[in-house]
Figure 1 (cartoon, rainbow, N blue to C red):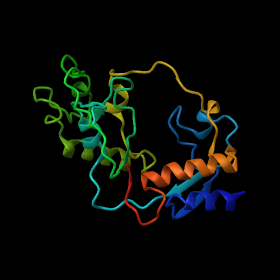
Figure 2 (figure 1 turned 90 degrees about the vertical axis):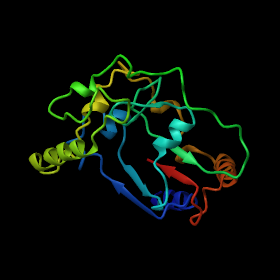
Figure 3 (figure 1 turned 180 degrees about the horizontal axis):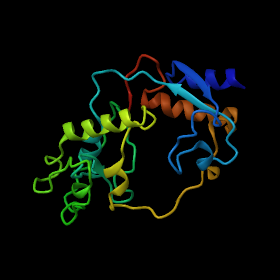
Figure 4 (figure 1 turned 180 degrees about the vertical axis):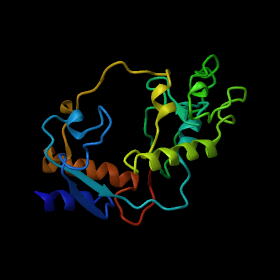
Amino acid sequence: MRKEVENFLMKFGVFKVGIADPEQGFKMAFEGCHPRDVMRNCNSVIVFALHVGLDYYTTLEYAYEAGLGVYGRQSLIITREYGPRVNFGVVLTNAYMKPDKPLKDFNPCKECNTCAKLRPVKAVNEKKTPPTGFNRKRCLNFIDKIRQKTERRIKLCGYCYNHCPAGEVKERTFNIGRWKTLIDLDEKEKGNLLKILKHQGIDQPGRRGLIKL
């Protein structure tokens, strides 16, 4: 089975595949972030690597320009649906498509300064227009202190990320069991998926068509 998984992923430009044990290495996972919090019967975690060139821009700017969200005080992109708790993916194409515009009717930080009041970070100046009030140096210094005090068991603080009230989700809104996994796809479905991805130009190892934050 492992070889089948590796061969399938290699078609998408993946250059390395590894398997992690959900029992080991995840003991310090945050609540809700353990593999079995997402998939109860998870027995293996398939991890793969894609090369990302150094010339790529951050996906945050793309997300802003595409109207998916706006910059918050903490310099993260805030969406209407889930606030800053999202990841963005970008596909480059030579197809002409009508572009969306940055959001002008959404300003979640106007009456909110929650992240600016967080202690002991103090990395946000509420008097400045988002995201110019974000002090990246203070943020990184605080993260460095956390890593030192926890012997690097905790690598990020997540204060502004977790406390942002925008798009706050009270309970899980998805069930991974609703969707098929790649392994569940039959040969015809796999073929159709490959055709779609090939059309977008991201299944070739040498093509720079996929960006992920």
